[in-house]
Image 1: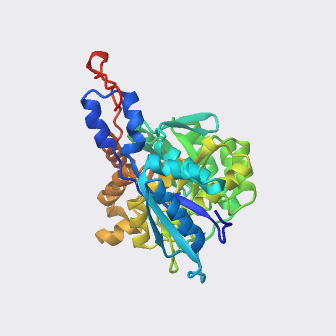
Image 2: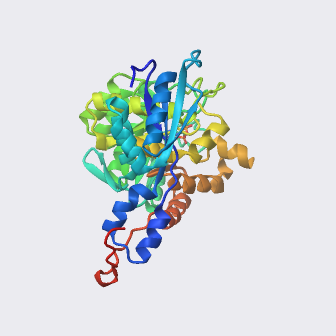
Image 3: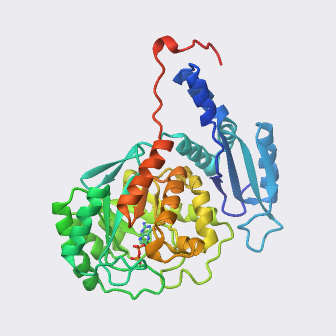
Length: 418
Ligand code: HH2
């Protein structure tokens, strides 16, 4: 290929899965080995190449077609003023075909496509390393309960510095099925008053200490301040949930790395102050993917391990109603990045706008988003109403996370070559 003119990137689109075909075959005695051989032929995938010159795009289309993929030249969404010279290429085909395409492309982009296709196929069970704990992901959806030690959180659930009330709620959430308790001392709602380090510490530290000692669930600190994260980790928290994805404060990544904490990296356009002022995207999922890829790189460079990282598309953070709905519809695309996914839709205004209800009346709307986020690949859901959402998640898991039983030896048809 000729030298790239722009920033050459590739990402995967929503998949069409062949799971059902494989299941029907399994029911008829096909063994795992035979099905494994077939996997690449049954699953379909689409990929967008962006940042190409017109010449490169034409060349890539030729190559993709020769390998048996469908390939379409399109207007570039990221060219910004150079539309005439740039193009995007969309390629679609079976996983096997796209893997062959990845192999035929040397350079960064081939490697990147191959990695994404592998991420997609890899079984979802894995562990999340959080300080001294290991949280099992993939077998069922984990529930993160929200504990707002604030006076001004958007949903009106904040309990300020009332530690007894915070502890009571923490116990109740754990009993109701929370795996993680996310303690925050500063509201991130648009226009919320900033809180000083001292005040945030005063709100969260005593509570975190008590929860870590007295409640079994893992404790997460929801903060953008390095000092708050550091102190919280020293008092028993094991996850840093930073809505700025380590961008707000220099020392944050190092603090998380030192404690080997779990880290949630969330996408946000702008800052909580200005994020809802007319947010715009030329390519919503492409921009979120690029942002999260860079955030992951920042984390890895600071010494945070791959197995410590979880990503989050940041529902409601610099997004319109339509953006939030689109993210939920296309969540699966983020699986190609290869990291577990956390989704926080609980009681958010997207639900209020659709249903015309206030934050305290968004339970069913939240349940619908929780179920669909799980269907789209969410590993963890962040919620206020733990009892109800743990049930919604359990129901969604029963439908979606099916353990395949191996057929008995005598039932296996010897297929020879399928
Ligand atoms: N949403 C909120 C806060 N923190 N963290 C992650 N990772 N993902 C989210 O979607 C997310 C988050 C906003 O919800 P809440 O904490 O209830 O409100 P407030 O920030 O007003 O306290």
